[in-house]
Length: 258
Ligand SMILES: C[S@@+](CC[C@H](N)C(=O)[O-])C[C@H]1O[C@@H](n2cnc3c(N)ncnc32)[C@H](O)[C@@H]1O
Image (cartoon, rainbow, N blue to C red; front, side, top):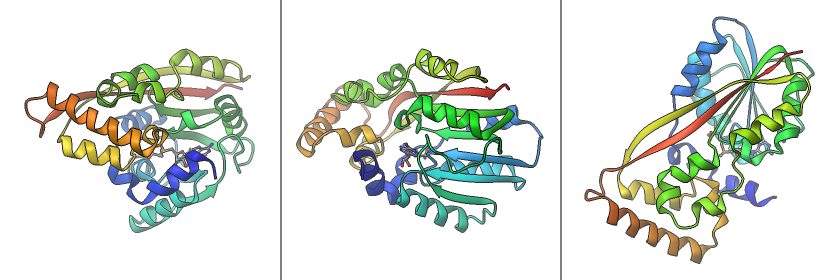
């Protein structure tokens, strides 16, 4: 088991509650996909399925979704969650993003949310090119290193930005796409969210290691950093029940052109 896999195995049961789920990218994706149905799609690095439920609710019954993840605990959570919500058309696969168990040219679209920084990016894009139909689209929702550095964790949590060196900047994603024949970056769109939370909720999220970045600290470093984070927030906000900050994400739209 890799360190990343160990991390996701530990947090699988708490994962959906620990993270904030954004509806905006799903609405934007829906607009771009339009009315074409039926759809065969895949969500790679699907985790516990919070975005798969939203995709099902917004794109409808006429979509079959392959839910793919390296981590078995996450897939079990997803299976329970989607089944409990009555989602009919999905199948889970334990697999890596650079070796997808899907046929050539079999997908209308592919999604990945908050996961591409864990993948071998160029090999993942080569798999997207292989498995998408010509004209099929890959939607990559993530955050850049710069966006991450501007979040409340980047600003107030000691070492967070330095340790999280896996995220990609736009030019790195564009370069990886450009290296795959017949794959083209069509657009990228930034999303900004004004957030408010109690300090206690933020501390709970960090203690639950809601970002895998926190698993890159050893226990002692983490406790010291959490104390310093608490002090930093208290120094900057009069009302610690209403800590406000801005989260930022980016959505890449990539197309198989030939
Ligand atoms: C940060 S979580 C995001 C989960 C989900 N997309 C969400 O937003 O809730 C990243 C997920 O990617 C999975 N993962 C990490 N490396 C992977 C790889 N190489 N191939 C497939 N899945 C991977 C992890 O197991 C984890 O479930």
